[in-house]
Image 1 (cartoon, rainbow, N blue to C red):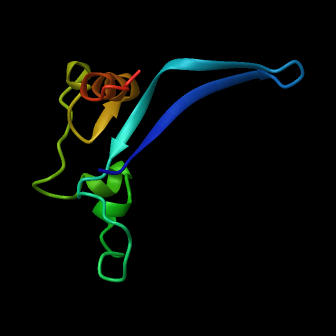
Image 2: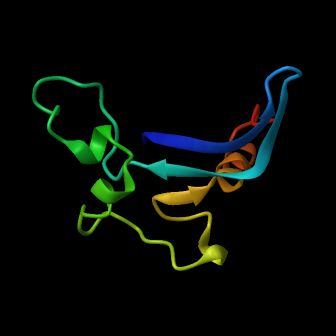
Length: 94
């Protein structure tokens, strides 16, 4: 599965450098399983792009979230829910 992460930062100063990282982010997932690009699959935007506006049109595959309590399912999730999933499913998740 292909996904991207958005993390939000606030840059207050360059010199001296002062940056704050917000404690939550966003992860967006493709709706079709990722395969390495080749001429036969280049037009499958549901595989190669994680854009919400594109993937939500993939009828029958896109899973909408119903609210904040539903942040660990679907094709748009919180970044911390993805990190928790990695910790739970991989021995070296830390």
